[in-house]
Amino acid sequence: MGATGLVVGTAAGLLPAGRAAGEDDGWARARRIAEQIAVASFPERDFDIRDFGAEAGGSADASAAIDRAIAACHSAGGGRVVVPAGTFACGPVHLKSNVNLHLLEGAELSFSTAPERYLPLVFTRWEGMELMNYSPLIYACDQENVAVTGLGTLQGNADDRTWWPWKGPHSEQHWELVAGQDQAPARALLERQTEAGVPVAERIHGEGSWLRPPMVQFYRCKRVLVEGVTIRNAPFWLIHPVLSEDVVVRGVTCSSHGPNSDGCNPESCRRVLIENCRFDTGDDCIAIKSGRNADGRRIAVPSEDILIRGCHMAAGHGGVVIGSEISGGVRHVYAEDCEMNSPELERALRIKTNSVRGGVLEHLHYRNIQVGRVKDVLVINFHYEEGDAGNFDPLVRDVQVSNLRVDEADRVFQVRGFARNPVRNLRLENVVVRRAASAGIVEHVQGLQARNVSINGKSWHNTTGQPA
Image 1 (tube, one colour):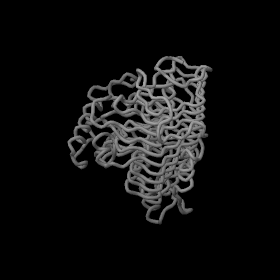
Image 2 (cartoon, rainbow, N blue to C red):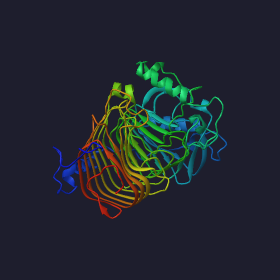
Image 3 (tube, one colour):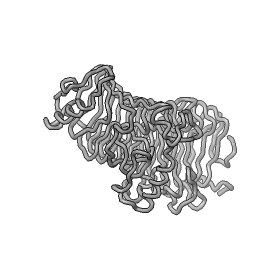
Image 4 (cartoon, helix red, strand yellow):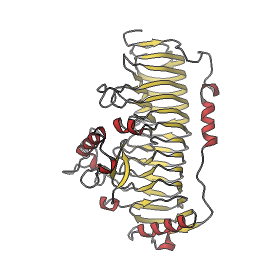
């Protein structure tokens, strides 16, 4: 072990260095996820929102008509609630079991930016903490077999003057600051409420708290499908399934450059497939989560069996991310055949936690990743946000990266465990970084294997935190 706390070599439990990263590395499980996931399906029965009173044009509010169409579809045993071509103004949409909200090509649901439209408060989760808050723009709770599909657009209408100013002052601020509109006090209050064990029904937020609602949230749902749609200008996170099973997000375009504009954040979910999606976001493209601090430990449901494939990531804080609201743990994550490229993409593969979050993060596999321009290639950071300020050391183990190609990076590694609690069993195989200003740092890692790793044309097999 050197000055950085790095252990190089084969640790107990690691595969032999000569073994190829293939099915015996856990990818057989990824194949089973794709084969066994239960995909939502619906009767061939359509309910056109115009038949329930909706009018296109963007001036007349279609909310009541959409609600009537959803109720009729649900009562009939399910089908498609069809949004035809045209712009339809609306407030929150609450889905019911066996309902597929289907937007035809050229259709747009244009959501109100008036916060009062998202009352009454609903049971939801905000940055990994349960509370009563504004309704998500599209919301389903305790439903089964639900979907949002089609080639249309969900337009959240958030911008530098609406919704986004609630973030308050920030180093990346491009939104206007409005006196009195700042999420920070309510965020701190919610954290105190979770730490004190205040019942969720008594965590009343909404008006005056400035906690923005997510765009699309499925809470405690089964068989969820989001397919084909384009999501633009969300107030907060774009797609947020929570405590849900059998979730498929396919062929979706996520485009939103506001604060916390995460693309797809499965949280405490089981069996998730995210494939052939495009992300151009103001925060993480995909971020896997499982609850924040005390609430994550109280609920104690990990995210597991998640397969990400064939996705394209442009701008964002991270391409494929785990954390930081990860206190419930995560296991068996597989990401393959993805492309990432943007001067505004800060990190390609990212794991973020700390000793306040904690969590067991294990069996994380990445392969066949092509990166053009990125700032940091691989980040495993135990010092995120609060840093080493708690009593819940994270456990990160069995991380495998193979067949990763990067054209240009500012820094290759920011891998930082704790001296008392290192990252365990990190395996890098067939990793090529053509141009990098710095190799970065790898510290406090136990059981590192590096096979066929090169930076700037030179073989990389050990690190001291110095450039290659």
